[in-house]
View 1 (cartoon, one colour):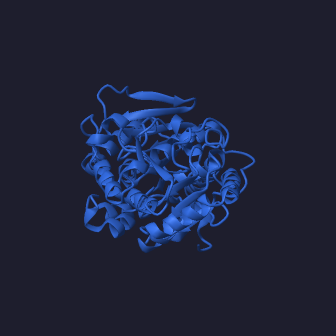
View 2 (view 1 turned 30 degrees about the vertical axis):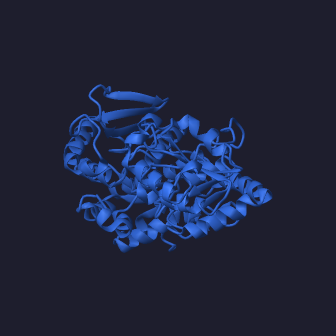
View 3 (view 1 turned 90 degrees about the vertical axis):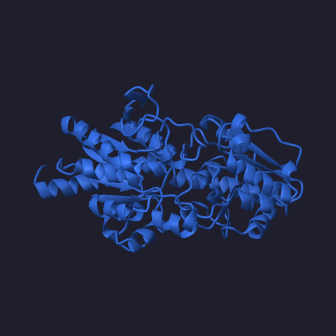
Length: 423
């Protein structure tokens, strides 16, 4: 990391805040109200919801702007004290895949501009590239400061998915426009900083603030899913899309006797049979002769996740790539060892060997070896779990993440005041 890039995620809390700010968080497809586990509902939803709440706890007023995807949704919904969700009319009021939302971002941006012209926020923080595009259009002419978090980059997705990448072809160009046009980029990990540099985003306008985890809900203490019939249990949690590497976990399972794999995510349990990805994975499990040891749980409400994590011996996160990856943090907060692919944000969050293991992506043999070593050594699993909990408390609590984000906001506001001469 170059010296011009500030890492704000591990320092001490600021002793005094800037007073009450009006903060606009823009998250066009990832509503903080959505149930997790769907194709387009995952880490960004969690991030926006908890960042909003943690900023409110620091005394700020937060409005989250997300696209209306149901005609019966109210215009505004209180998420918690100090946080309101504003449903923006942009496109048809029905669920749409995020890759089909770009044509509606102009309408989204116009709505933001009309709203902010009447009641401007002190600072705008957009999440994901399309939110950045809409926000950039809205703040032009209003003089509002704009910070942006990508959550994922098109360059990385295209490199890994190639022809399977369904993103709009303009994505990478728009991402560059947002990075150059905003006042500051908040990257979530060091690996992202490297990618931004390749895109031409000056390192001097990048801060590193990691994603966080709710350390009061994700704890080692509390209910845990009862043991199954196998001696050991692995758990994989997240969206059911090929890049998350569930097929790698299934292939590794064939090398791990007396072990079951729980796959949490995707559609609700009563709709799993209709899901093409579930069908593909079941076929892979049958061919590997482990179908009886793979259990698909489906998407679950977020409050059920900690008990599932606590019931696992090892949590696996074998994605092909991972822009940040919140699941390792949730697992470590619950005192569970993690075996993850050595990609993206997982390079920052999983400390090998103290909190788990890092393995090459798309390598079932390496995954099986790392998991097998932990399953064979209960003391090592316990030590990894305890170290993971300590690491999360030290670095990744939402209070710390919100404080670091607030520091980035204040830096942009101070720079703007210096330019305009307003004190």
